[in-house]
Image (cartoon, rainbow, N blue to C red):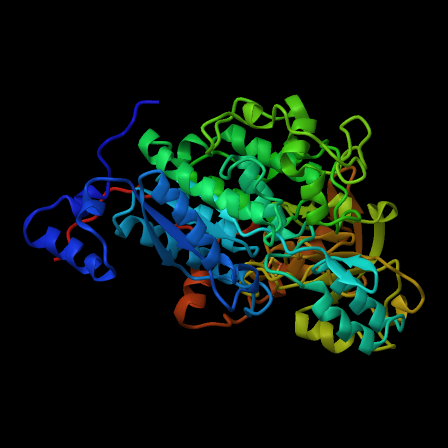
Length: 573
Ligand code: FES
């Protein structure tokens, strides 16, 4: 590739007179020598570090290692903070703020003298938010995720972030685990720096970034505490400087082929349903055509190869030792577009040509998969005209075709009020329906879809029921859970019309979700339906509710779709 010699940052550093003085002089208060402003690539290190985001709390240290690589390659690294989104603390849901964080990233990149960027992410939404923001600028960009925590260890057993919390809490509610034991599992679960070490949303999105070609090959699975993550940080710092010199911008990597690869890899790893909304939003930013049906067309027949919680048994640390994502991608072989370019400067095929698998218990071979067709299924029907999703690999096979009586909850608060009541009219054949938890309704499309089961059924030994909502589900969760129904209830989607006692039919094989109620009765209910009062009248949440798109469109803001490039803005003085 021809080397680029004139960089964007020269519009700041290269100026003479008053403006150049201002741009350089204030930077010199950090002790920067003159020759740093001599036209070398300026590399932003976009850091979502925060002590309020425990999964990203180690990223300051990782940034220092990235800088080593940038210096070594002749670049000028400048670290800057952005908003961070901590899944475990933020209310009502981090998804409410994904688009806000992406705006912070986009505007910080464009407004500053940056020629390329290293994106440092970790917790669930920080990865898509950074990719989306950077895509709207289309500078050379490379991602380095913070890596998963080490396996949880509790009384001689491995335990997984999230997945085992759901299991333990159901055990407490069902009387199978004491509260004391539950409490002592806390520290045992999160015992090192890093993000959730199940194949939850953080590990999924790290894998998606790698499958898209946005990280160095092999980066997703390295535990945060492993020294080899620092090695990758160093190499990432070196590589971004070369990318700037090569003019390797994001749009050269995030092609249709890259997204198709990501969708197929998501099926093979048993990845989170959250990948659907994030990949749709990212494709919208970079201008690559992608729609919800692509996830079914491209992903439905992908075999499940990775035996990780919540779909399987193992955790990310095991996945790394088994060979990580390159081993899975090599196994998929010509199911992937081998020619897709990646940030390494090599194609996918070149990156994975020699990728070994060291443990067939963790990464299965393509001809002997864990399940033959495990990709996310996209449902259609009169209950979800614009689609809904289900993750077959996390569902109970016998419930994938089911007809049951609806037990409806108009809000999550109503659900919590009623679910413990022994008099609740529900049995294991029922379909639990939650409304008004979608993008506009919650607002923010919270991870409420895996509704806990009624205690009286847990005590009977029931482990799963069909659940339907316009919400999302934590990537660490499992169950026969239909999510992302669109249009959502809050905009008058058919979910809003479901009443207690209606019969609902789910047929995953036929991709069908049907509300068995006569059309004239639905019309009558539609006439009587009233839109809920907006929960927020001002501020960011108001902006969100006014502009968020539906789940099948990636829940981005209507005005953020696409990009504005990285042209140097007008002068500030
Ligand atoms: Fe941050 Fe799971 S809570 S990755």
